[in-house]
Length: 125
Ligand code: SF4
Image (cartoon, rainbow, N blue to C red; front, side):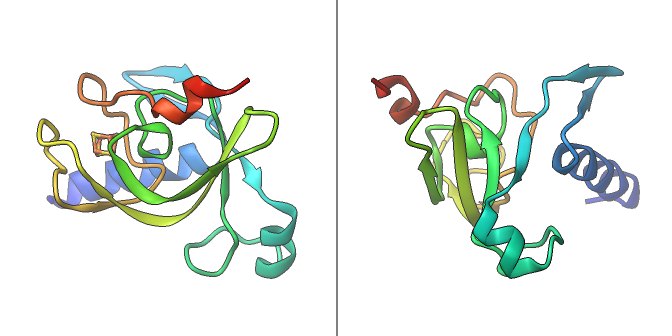
């Protein structure tokens, strides 16, 4: 990836983690709700992979790996169905994606056009 591409990715990732995703100048719905209580206690409040129980993502977030049916990372749906907690990297299993067979972070995106909603999110009571 070019330096410009890396900078853009890091900027978007930072915005994603702080709850505001910008695409084409438009601010989209907040994505990461926060760290789980256990994660916040464990990590001392910092955000980082492998040091926390997981990131808590709004289950309604579209176009990002955390809620994509093709994502092969560890995750769970909250009992009320409103959030998804993810634990780190996951494999992309979508042959139509440029990230197929690659590890991605749960906040990778937006993946408009190839993202498909995780079926488990449709099965909530
Ligand atoms: S298709 Fe895109 S959003 Fe879905 S798992 Fe692959 S990289 Fe992530």
